[in-house]
Length: 219
Image (cartoon, rainbow, N blue to C red):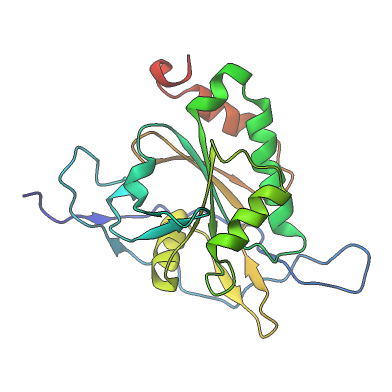
């Protein structure tokens, strides 16, 4: 049996955290920084019987539910690269823009390569984001669920994954969230190979990171 290892996070410099709050102005403000929190903790990874490295997020043993109500573990995403972001469906500004940024990456992939890439949205609001809400969000944003997976889980499991992705978020008294806007590229084994920060960011580096993956996956 494999020895239990600890996953060490490389701290990323976050230059801005964005809040999704409804405003009376025509363009919602999205610049509220969450309350200061300690840097992401070192989180033990579960032992895994397969060939995953200690850096793989797929070592996590948490249970998740997708937009169809199907129960799964993250390791079921193994086998092809995944582009991952954390959102919540009642967000009025940043999350739709972040979703659009993922769609931009999807659209810029050659059509014959898109089936080799998965896209994952993880809610930070499990109290409201039921599988039904996630499915409605996918329909409203025209997400092709042959490639897109929307996930919810228990609050502690969501926070654990957020810490590993270096995503910070905090809920305010009105039920809105201040949160990081990060897009993460995982390789087929669930290891972080690239992160894109901010809204409306040029995706050239993210696309290049995907193109640099093994030719057997993308060619």
